[in-house]
Length: 231
Image (cartoon, rainbow, N blue to C red):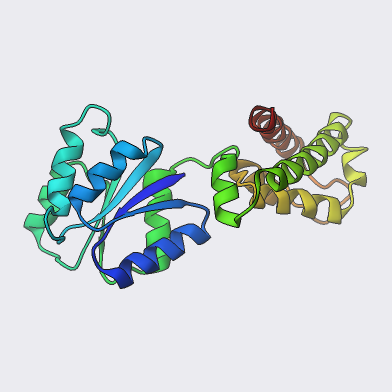
Protein backbone atom coordinates (compact mmCIF):
# COMPACT_ATOMS: atom_id res chain seq x y z
CA UNK A 1 0.00 0.00 0.00
CA UNK A 2 1.31 3.44 -0.95
CA UNK A 3 0.89 6.31 1.52
CA UNK A 4 1.49 10.01 0.98
CA UNK A 5 3.15 11.77 3.92
CA UNK A 6 3.00 15.58 3.88
CA UNK A 7 5.51 16.79 6.47
CA UNK A 8 7.96 19.70 6.38
CA UNK A 9 9.98 18.69 9.45
CA UNK A 10 12.85 16.53 8.17
CA UNK A 11 13.28 14.64 11.44
CA UNK A 12 9.61 13.73 11.71
CA UNK A 13 9.42 12.88 8.00
CA UNK A 14 12.41 10.54 8.30
CA UNK A 15 10.96 8.86 11.39
CA UNK A 16 7.55 8.31 9.84
CA UNK A 17 8.99 7.09 6.54
CA UNK A 18 11.23 4.60 8.32
CA UNK A 19 8.45 3.24 10.52
CA UNK A 20 5.98 2.90 7.67
CA UNK A 21 8.53 1.32 5.34
CA UNK A 22 9.51 -1.27 7.95
CA UNK A 23 5.85 -2.25 8.18
CA UNK A 24 5.55 -2.83 4.45
CA UNK A 25 4.14 0.49 3.26
CA UNK A 26 5.51 2.43 0.31
CA UNK A 27 5.91 6.13 1.19
CA UNK A 28 5.72 9.20 -1.03
CA UNK A 29 6.96 12.30 0.79
CA UNK A 30 5.78 15.90 0.32
CA UNK A 31 6.99 19.05 2.12
CA UNK A 32 3.72 20.97 1.91
CA UNK A 33 0.15 20.74 0.68
CA UNK A 34 0.94 22.04 -2.78
CA UNK A 35 3.60 19.41 -3.36
CA UNK A 36 1.27 16.77 -1.93
CA UNK A 37 -1.39 17.57 -4.53
CA UNK A 38 1.19 17.33 -7.30
CA UNK A 39 2.31 13.93 -6.04
CA UNK A 40 -1.28 12.70 -5.87
CA UNK A 41 -1.64 13.49 -9.57
CA UNK A 42 1.53 11.58 -10.45
CA UNK A 43 0.84 8.66 -8.09
CA UNK A 44 -2.77 7.58 -8.61
CA UNK A 45 -2.11 4.41 -6.58
CA UNK A 46 -1.79 6.36 -3.31
CA UNK A 47 -4.30 4.86 -0.86
CA UNK A 48 -4.02 7.19 2.11
CA UNK A 49 -2.67 10.55 3.28
CA UNK A 50 -0.92 11.56 6.50
CA UNK A 51 -0.52 15.32 6.75
CA UNK A 52 0.88 17.82 9.19
CA UNK A 53 -1.24 20.89 9.90
CA UNK A 54 1.42 23.61 10.02
CA UNK A 55 3.38 23.61 6.74
CA UNK A 56 4.77 26.37 4.51
CA UNK A 57 2.95 27.52 1.34
CA UNK A 58 -0.06 25.27 1.88
CA UNK A 59 -1.20 23.88 5.23
CA UNK A 60 -2.62 20.48 6.07
CA UNK A 61 -6.08 21.99 6.35
CA UNK A 62 -5.65 23.48 2.87
CA UNK A 63 -4.72 20.03 1.64
CA UNK A 64 -7.78 18.48 3.26
CA UNK A 65 -10.02 21.07 1.61
CA UNK A 66 -8.49 20.31 -1.77
CA UNK A 67 -8.96 16.57 -1.27
CA UNK A 68 -12.63 16.89 -0.37
CA UNK A 69 -13.23 19.12 -3.37
CA UNK A 70 -11.70 16.68 -5.85
CA UNK A 71 -13.84 13.83 -7.22
CA UNK A 72 -11.01 11.30 -7.30
CA UNK A 73 -9.65 12.13 -3.84
CA UNK A 74 -12.69 13.08 -1.78
CA UNK A 75 -12.93 9.66 -0.15
CA UNK A 76 -9.18 9.20 0.34
CA UNK A 77 -8.65 8.33 4.03
CA UNK A 78 -6.53 10.86 5.92
CA UNK A 79 -4.72 11.19 9.22
CA UNK A 80 -3.65 14.55 10.64
CA UNK A 81 -0.51 15.07 12.75
CA UNK A 82 0.21 18.32 14.55
CA UNK A 83 1.71 19.87 17.66
CA UNK A 84 -1.47 21.85 18.14
CA UNK A 85 -4.08 20.41 20.46
CA UNK A 86 -7.00 22.81 20.36
CA UNK A 87 -10.63 21.96 19.78
CA UNK A 88 -10.98 24.35 16.89
CA UNK A 89 -8.25 22.64 14.86
CA UNK A 90 -9.57 19.19 15.69
CA UNK A 91 -13.12 20.16 14.77
CA UNK A 92 -12.04 21.66 11.45
CA UNK A 93 -9.91 18.65 10.55
CA UNK A 94 -12.75 16.27 11.39
CA UNK A 95 -15.21 18.39 9.40
CA UNK A 96 -12.85 18.10 6.45
CA UNK A 97 -12.91 14.33 6.69
CA UNK A 98 -9.76 13.32 8.59
CA UNK A 99 -10.21 9.91 10.21
CA UNK A 100 -7.63 10.15 12.98
CA UNK A 101 -5.70 12.87 14.78
CA UNK A 102 -2.16 12.34 16.15
CA UNK A 103 -0.21 14.76 18.30
CA UNK A 104 3.51 15.25 17.81
CA UNK A 105 5.99 13.93 18.60
CA UNK A 106 4.57 10.92 16.77
CA UNK A 107 5.10 7.61 18.53
CA UNK A 108 5.86 4.74 16.12
CA UNK A 109 3.49 2.28 17.79
CA UNK A 110 0.64 4.79 17.77
CA UNK A 111 1.37 5.71 14.16
CA UNK A 112 1.12 2.10 12.98
CA UNK A 113 -1.98 1.54 15.09
CA UNK A 114 -3.73 4.50 13.46
CA UNK A 115 -2.49 3.66 9.96
CA UNK A 116 -3.73 0.09 10.25
CA UNK A 117 -7.09 1.25 11.57
CA UNK A 118 -7.67 3.96 8.95
CA UNK A 119 -5.93 2.71 5.82
CA UNK A 120 -6.16 -1.02 6.28
CA UNK A 121 -9.14 -1.75 8.55
CA UNK A 122 -9.34 -5.31 7.21
CA UNK A 123 -6.39 -7.64 6.93
CA UNK A 124 -5.30 -8.09 3.33
CA UNK A 125 -5.28 -11.39 1.45
CA UNK A 126 -1.90 -10.75 -0.15
CA UNK A 127 0.28 -7.66 -0.39
CA UNK A 128 0.91 -6.50 -3.94
CA UNK A 129 4.12 -7.66 -5.59
CA UNK A 130 5.21 -4.02 -5.98
CA UNK A 131 4.91 -3.42 -2.23
CA UNK A 132 6.89 -6.55 -1.35
CA UNK A 133 9.58 -5.77 -3.93
CA UNK A 134 9.89 -2.19 -2.65
CA UNK A 135 9.88 -3.15 1.03
CA UNK A 136 12.58 -5.83 0.75
CA UNK A 137 14.49 -4.28 -2.20
CA UNK A 138 13.96 -7.41 -4.28
CA UNK A 139 14.26 -7.93 -8.00
CA UNK A 140 11.15 -9.00 -9.86
CA UNK A 141 12.75 -12.38 -10.52
CA UNK A 142 13.52 -12.93 -6.84
CA UNK A 143 9.96 -12.06 -5.92
CA UNK A 144 8.66 -14.53 -8.52
CA UNK A 145 10.79 -17.34 -7.07
CA UNK A 146 9.65 -16.56 -3.52
CA UNK A 147 6.01 -16.44 -4.59
CA UNK A 148 6.32 -19.74 -6.45
CA UNK A 149 7.92 -21.44 -3.44
CA UNK A 150 5.19 -20.09 -1.19
CA UNK A 151 2.55 -21.37 -3.63
CA UNK A 152 4.02 -24.87 -3.29
CA UNK A 153 3.72 -24.62 0.51
CA UNK A 154 0.13 -23.38 0.23
CA UNK A 155 -0.82 -26.23 -2.11
CA UNK A 156 0.81 -28.73 0.25
CA UNK A 157 -1.23 -27.45 3.18
CA UNK A 158 -4.44 -27.45 1.13
CA UNK A 159 -3.87 -31.04 0.07
CA UNK A 160 -3.40 -32.04 3.71
CA UNK A 161 -6.55 -30.19 4.76
CA UNK A 162 -8.65 -32.01 2.18
CA UNK A 163 -8.25 -35.18 4.24
CA UNK A 164 -8.25 -33.47 7.62
CA UNK A 165 -7.47 -34.46 10.30
CA UNK A 166 -5.42 -37.46 9.17
CA UNK A 167 -2.93 -35.84 6.79
CA UNK A 168 -2.96 -32.36 8.29
CA UNK A 169 -1.94 -33.80 11.63
CA UNK A 170 1.16 -35.17 9.91
CA UNK A 171 2.37 -31.75 8.83
CA UNK A 172 5.52 -31.06 10.77
CA UNK A 173 5.78 -27.97 12.91
CA UNK A 174 8.54 -26.69 10.63
CA UNK A 175 6.15 -26.95 7.65
CA UNK A 176 3.61 -24.78 9.40
CA UNK A 177 6.33 -22.36 10.48
CA UNK A 178 7.51 -22.09 6.87
CA UNK A 179 3.98 -21.23 5.69
CA UNK A 180 3.66 -18.64 8.46
CA UNK A 181 7.00 -17.09 7.49
CA UNK A 182 5.94 -16.95 3.85
CA UNK A 183 2.60 -15.41 4.75
CA UNK A 184 4.35 -12.73 6.80
CA UNK A 185 6.95 -12.03 4.12
CA UNK A 186 4.37 -11.68 1.34
CA UNK A 187 1.86 -9.77 3.45
CA UNK A 188 -0.81 -12.48 3.55
CA UNK A 189 -2.26 -11.01 6.72
CA UNK A 190 -5.52 -12.98 6.79
CA UNK A 191 -3.70 -16.28 6.33
CA UNK A 192 -1.10 -15.40 8.95
CA UNK A 193 -3.90 -14.65 11.43
CA UNK A 194 -5.68 -17.91 10.61
CA UNK A 195 -2.44 -19.87 11.07
CA UNK A 196 -1.85 -18.22 14.42
CA UNK A 197 -5.39 -19.03 15.57
CA UNK A 198 -5.02 -22.65 14.50
CA UNK A 199 -1.59 -23.27 15.99
CA UNK A 200 -1.43 -26.87 17.28
CA UNK A 201 -2.30 -27.25 20.93
CA UNK A 202 -2.03 -30.29 23.16
CA UNK A 203 -4.15 -33.23 22.06
CA UNK A 204 -4.49 -35.59 19.12
CA UNK A 205 -5.76 -33.06 16.58
CA UNK A 206 -3.95 -29.79 15.76
CA UNK A 207 -7.14 -27.85 15.07
CA UNK A 208 -10.90 -28.11 15.30
CA UNK A 209 -13.33 -28.29 12.33
CA UNK A 210 -14.11 -24.56 12.44
CA UNK A 211 -10.42 -23.65 12.41
CA UNK A 212 -9.79 -26.13 9.59
CA UNK A 213 -12.55 -24.61 7.46
CA UNK A 214 -11.30 -21.07 8.05
CA UNK A 215 -7.70 -22.00 7.33
CA UNK A 216 -8.66 -23.76 4.11
CA UNK A 217 -10.67 -20.71 3.00
CA UNK A 218 -7.73 -18.36 3.58
CA UNK A 219 -5.31 -20.72 1.83
CA UNK A 220 -7.62 -20.82 -1.19
CA UNK A 221 -7.77 -17.02 -1.28
CA UNK A 222 -4.00 -16.71 -1.11
CA UNK A 223 -3.53 -19.33 -3.83
CA UNK A 224 -5.87 -17.38 -6.12
CA UNK A 225 -4.10 -14.09 -5.34
CA UNK A 226 -0.70 -15.64 -5.99
CA UNK A 227 -1.92 -16.90 -9.34
CA UNK A 228 -3.18 -13.44 -10.28
CA UNK A 229 0.11 -11.78 -9.32
CA UNK A 230 2.50 -14.27 -10.89
CA UNK A 231 0.38 -15.13 -13.93
